[in-house]
Length: 380
Image 1 (cartoon, rainbow, N blue to C red):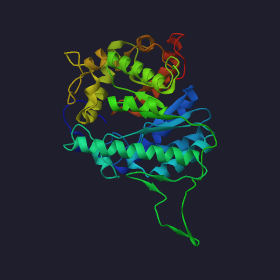
Image 2: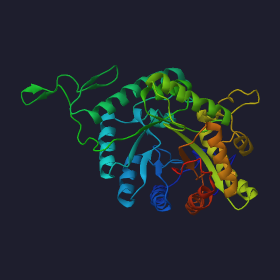
Image 3: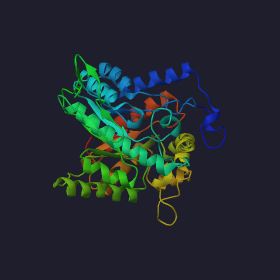
């Protein structure tokens, strides 16, 4: 994407060919193989649809992860995130179980509610994004659908046979004839042969209240460092209230930080700026900048398109020399009172893949050896 950056072209004015999209897909798989070779703990794909402008080209992370399961040895594999409303819940359960089993128990179930109305409303759900005029009712439907879908998935993955009846889903549907009788229960095949983890995106106050009560992990990203620390600690408080046990430092929470490593801080800033600005050209209209702090100390208005300097001030990006980035990881460890799960976002929108591979290599070989001993090395 040689024209990445602020201003023209508008995202929807770009159009990449099918061949270009598939080349990018193959390069993502290559990055997963490299991650395994470099000793990273996990590799996360995404799920997005219909994005001819080239931002997100993977519609099914599970399919890509099955390929990676065959080409890697140690890498844990997940999708940030399977958008539940865009799936039939039983199909997602089947596909995840297949991936988990064929990988020898290396799969993680990442779940989210979605971001892009273009995808959501074409695939069976709604999403209350910033640019959706019907945001409140869309969000209400989405949360109800999400809640039922994950209940169905967990039942299907854990029980020999199951049935479910909610406002949106009913399994099995009533009155299905089968060999002289009627279907009363279903049995999912395959089911996981190994224990598995669930991780959900935590981006809003209602989700922050929901995830720890459900008992699975929360993934947190694009938050001002002060807001993040409050959210991180509140997650632990809710967990203890609900489950009667205190979380170990960093447990059940994952931090995602955007990174860029270069020989000097000035070079890193120059390198990352176009991709940073393109990133916000993509996500700004969906309201993601609400995690930044405004001049009044409150959350920024949803329509904010941050500058790189604002992202650095909010500590959302770690940019500079290997020493600079390692120091920022140590600072996050201190801010959060312990950091166990850290995911790097090292590829900016528009970066060529040779740069992405270089960034992954520098993170593994130059940054992580400098990270303080208090920060565990489980990094994605």
